[in-house]
Length: 365
Picture (cartoon, rainbow, N blue to C red):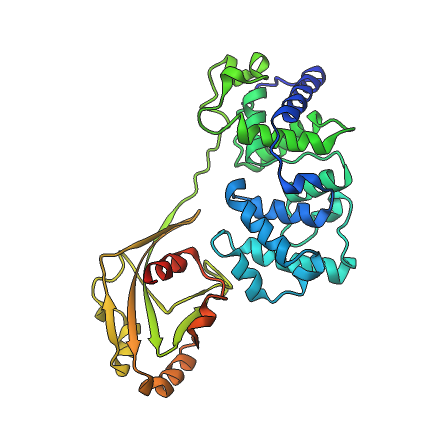
């Protein structure tokens, strides 16, 4: 059930106050000083599911390495994944790269200038399409992200589940009714910034909020209950034992394939167990196949590395296996048969790796 606490006059009042607040409180962020669609697209993809403080260095790094969409389109996929490593949600990086290729191949390197065309691009959803359309081309189409859901739900008293398809449509309708047709770009920036800085998920600063006098949630003491999100993500727990296999100046790596986490990134040969990471390596068939090389083994089963994803919690330990160079030829054969890769250790730095692997390698230094 939703409180229909919005009308034309209230919408104008709401928009006017947000624009005034934004003028006084906006952060100076690099993508706000341009209408270049490539820069805006890049920033929006990076900032999905990511805080500005975390995403800003990645944005700067991508723009430095790929100043134009053509540069990104022509970059090797390994380079794109390496620059993305640590940011998570790696499908964004793959879609980013493919979208750049499509824009160069199909659109002559130019972004479409309307929402209905932008949304057809690879990896571009309604939010990103609205952001590019409004910020670059001043099309009056509203952005609706987590910040916007929260501001609208609290101010207008909307209790529809934001995780439902009907909820998303309702909030998009409200947002598009509020957006000033003559100033869509600034309004979109303002409402997102307001949700990020003022109307925060926890402990919103209601005492000095310019909207509090007409905010449904504040007047009815419902700020902690809005927005409503009923569907909870079911989190799966997984248990890995990684094998860090070193032979002289080379190391064995595994390219993650499609159909699981970290597609396109490199990790190490891994054994997945049902209940917890291995306490004894003999329990892994992978280890049994490595004993032929008479490796020197370093294994602290109690040191567990944790990595939290949206849908999964990963618990992993690592075994380091040092194989003498005299076994290199036989190891190369095993690596090929097992669909792994044997690379120079110095090349490992240049490969895209999951954060879990980065944590382990940092500890190894």
